[in-house]
Image (cartoon, rainbow, N blue to C red; front, side, top):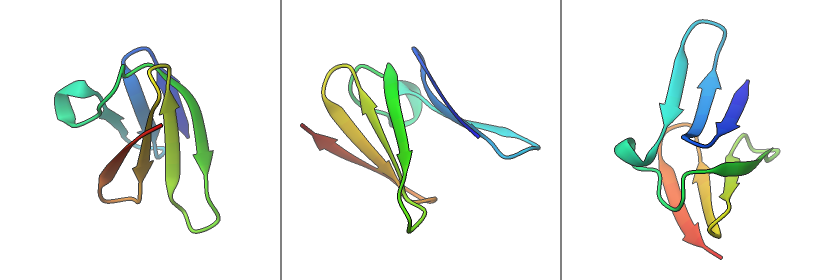
Length: 65
């Protein structure tokens, strides 16, 4: 389960919580307002400052809209 908040994004796998914030590589405002999963398993996130982030299960990739 993915959770977007004013601090960034987190995923809970049923056992542990993994968080992505500005402190560990998230760029932009950090206030996540949208999350979508693609058919290939990638997750895309958007924030209020126009940053877009893709998470492929290993790395964060940053894009600017």
